[in-house]
Length: 146
Ligand SMILES: [Fe+2]
Image (cartoon, rainbow, N blue to C red; front, side, top):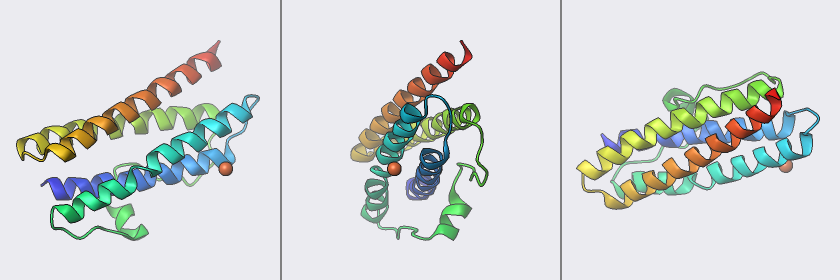
């Protein structure tokens, strides 16, 4: 059901935002200023989508989950309690962008089938967001290998 998937998307977005902020604070390396700034922007861009996801759940007539324990149950983005090395942070964030991308593509199809065009449009915007972030991270990782 679309509302249930929006709840999964909300929880996953919260997890992704928290992880991005964790990496913003704790990343280290010779390119620290750029890495720190990249994760600040990633956190902000991801966090900016949270309210709209939550409000679509309400628009569909469901209540919006709003607790950390519910987000932990619902999220498909795995929590990170450790401080990985920079390259591993980027690899993990790339994987997470791909996971988010797959979820919103599936939800675009579901929203279209249910003739929820506003939600479908929003899912298309999120596909662009996560696709662009994945491109940035792939480019960062390529530079690191040289
Ligand atoms: Fe900061």
